[in-house]
Image (cartoon, rainbow, N blue to C red; front, side, top):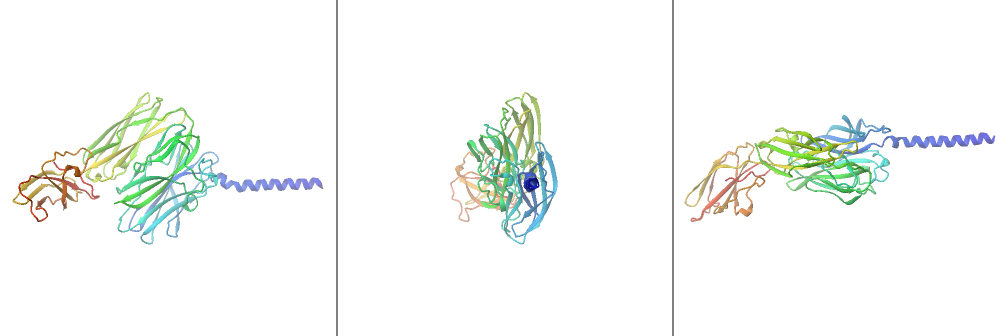
Length: 469
C-alpha cells in the first residue's frame, strides 16, 4: 500500500512538471521579435496605406510565426493586417512586411500601435525580455491645413552588429518623400499598450551612447559588454516648424568580442549641385585588416520618382575599394532639405562581419536667374530677365542695395545673404512674370545713387536658387 502511495505521489509530481513545461511552451517558442517600425502613405484625405516591418528570430527552437498582425488605429478600432512578404536573412533573421489600408473618421491625432507577445530571449537591457511585450508605434496628424503627408521611409534595417570596445555607428537612412524636416532622439523601448518598458536602460558604454538630432547618426562609444541590446529611436517629422508626426523604431544590436576592425568609407559630408547637372561623386573604402569588401548604397536619390541614381564600385584587393555614385539631377529635385545618400561598406571575414556607413548630404540647388537687365528712369528702375529654365519655379525674389558688393555665391550658398548688404524689396509671382519696376513702393527712388539688384528663383517649398550675377 505504501508503494502505491509513493507511486501516486511521484506520478502527481511528474504531471505537475509536465504541466509547468507545457505552460512555459508559449513563452519558449514565442520569443522572436527583434526590431521593427510602422510607416504610412496618405492615399486621400482620410485614407492611408500602412506598412508594418518586423524583424524576427528564425534559429533552432524559434518556431513562432506571425502570418498576420493586429494594429490599433488610435480611433478605438483595430484591424488584422496580412503578411505580404517574408525574407529569410543570414544569422537567423527574418524580415516580415504587413500592409493594409484604413479610413479614419475625421481629422485628428492618431497613435498607431502594434503589439506582439514576446521579444527574443536574452536582451541584456530589457528586464525578462522573453516575457516582455514587443510594441512599436507611429503617431500621425490628419489636418487639412497641413495637407497630404507621408512618413519618412527608413532605408537601413534596424538590426546590426557591433564590436566590443570599438565605436559603433548606425543611421536609419530616413528619406522624407514630401521634403519635410526630420529630427532624431533616443527614447525608451515600448511594451504593453505602447508604453515605456519599466526598468529599461540604455546599453552600457565606456563613454556615451547618443544620436545626432539632425543627421540621425547613432554613436555608441563604445560597447563594454558582449550580448544582445535594444534601443528605440524617436524619429520626428516637421513641416514649417510644426511637428506633424513621429515614428518610434525599435532596433536590435548584437555585440561580439572580436579582433576584427570595421572598414572606413571616405567621402565628403556635403555636396551641393545645380539642378540639371549630372552628379558624379567618387569615394573610396579601406579595411584595416585587409579584408574583402561589399559595398551598397541607398537613400533619397534612389527613392525619388524623377531621375535614377546608380552606384558602381570595384574591389581592388588588400582591403581597398573604390566607387562612383552617379545621379542625374532635375528641377524636380530642388528643395530646402538635403537628400541623404548612405554608402555602406561591409567586410567579409571568418569572424564577425562589421560595417561602416557614410552619410552624405546632397543639396540640389535651383539655377540662377539669367540675363538680368537694369534700365534706370528718373525715380525708378525697370528690371527684366529671362524666365528660369525650371518649369516648377513659382516666382522670383528681388533684392536691392546701393553700390556693388562683389558677392559671388559658392556652391552651397542659396538666396542672397543679409551680410551682402542686399535687402529683399519685393516678390514676383509666376515663372513667366519676368518684368518689374522698382519705384521704392510708390515713393520713388532718390537720384544720385547706384542701385544694384540680385534676383533668385523661388521653388514650391519656398527655397531659393542661386543668386543672379
